[in-house]
Structure formats: structure tokens, C-alpha cells
Amino acid sequence: MTLSQAALEQLFLNARTANGFQDKPVPLSLVQQVYDIAKMGATSMNAQPARYVILHTAQAKERLLPTMSPGNVDKTRSAPVVVIVATDNQFYEHMPLVFPNFADAKALFEGNAALAAATASRNSTLSGAYFMIAARALGLDCGPMSGFDAAKVNAEFFPDGRCSVNFILNLGYGDDSKLFPRNPRLSFEQACTVL
Image 1: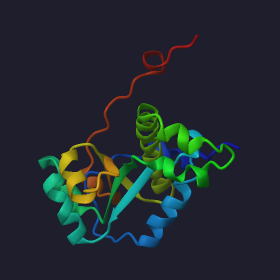
Image 2: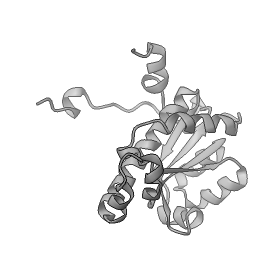
Image 3: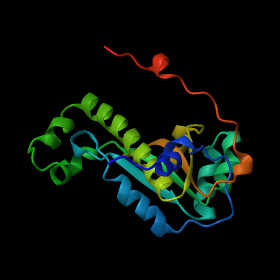
Image 4: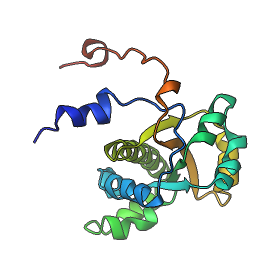
């Protein structure tokens, strides 16, 4: 089954990075729907290392603002919801639950720090992308950002060190007047090698 042209436009072709948001609330029930769709995306050995801190109140967002790059402060403040997409550095503790068909899955990662770190980083990023696509599918606009001080975010939200920030995602209903012009994309010939 192929998605309709309208669906492709909503998810990719017409979707834009939101730089500002309308003053329209996003209910937590909708954010939960986003997660419930995104969690079904594939991750290596079903590891699911992504964790999401949902900042839904002005007070919660105020804790994040001092960690943001100056150009990201206003857009973060205006977002109805801000999601800290994080990585659970001990994701393997859940392997008996999420990958029960391989009894040694937890031990595989627990005993190999490099493998665990690479798996956690790659798959939490992948999961964050699924989260964005699910949000777009449910009518939300996304503003992913890497302009922040990771050490400050981790100190504020993950002081025990178990998790660490991957990227930050503003969610809401975008203000089209604040969109930047769309930048070019590489062509197939520039980005792809066919062997």
C-alpha cells in the first residue's frame, strides 16, 4: 500500500521546521498518541533506548530556557510542548522485556560499553525521528533543535546520569509567518551511490 500524495505532503514534502507556534494548546493525550505510534518504529533488537521528557507547562519550559542557544529561546518559549529526546544509557536493563527471544541480550550490552553506547545513540536518534513523523501524522508541527548546552540540560533534567539529552523538539501548531525559506536538498546523484 502506498500512502496518498496528501499524506506524503503532510509528512515530508510540505512539512517544515517550525520556528514559531500559534497560541493553541496541545493536549497531553495527543502527545501520548504520538508516542504510542512512534514506539512501534523499528530499533536494533527492539532496544528502544529513547526516553522523552515532556515539558508541558511554562514552569517546566523555564527550566530548559537557560540551556538553549540564544536563537532558540523564543521559539522554545512559544512552543506549547517541548520534548527532550534523550538516551537511556542503561537501556539494556529492559532487554528481557523488549527482546525476550534472546536470553543473553542484556548481558551482551551490559558487558560491552562501546556496543551499548553506539546502540543507544543510534537508536534513540532513530526513535526521535519516528516521534517527529508520528507528530506530523497527527497534525502537529515540529521544531527539532541541537542548539543547546548538553551538559546544562543533563545537569538540570538527568542529574543521576542514567539518561542524556540527544536533541530537543518543539511541538505545536506552527506559525507559518515565522518559517524560513526552504533550503535546497541534495539530488539523488549527489547523495546516493548505486553499486
